[in-house]
Amino acid sequence: MNDPPATRLDPLPDFLNDPALRQVLAALPRARMVGGCVRDALLGRPVADIDLATPDAPQAVMDAL
Image 1: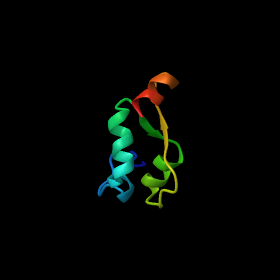
Image 2: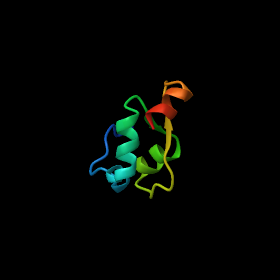
Image 3: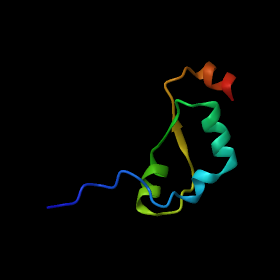
Image 4: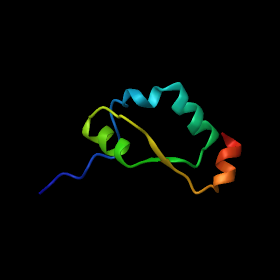
């Protein structure tokens, strides 16, 4: 039987300590990382780019940033 997939990263990937990413996530608290950055982090690969998704309207995102 297969083990369930990991649900957390230990240790956390370095890219999560990036001050610019932290600023963006602080400005957009409902944003979530999606796509390749999540896959790469889970596989222990270097993260080349970060995609975010948010339920906020485009104008709200621009205003927050």
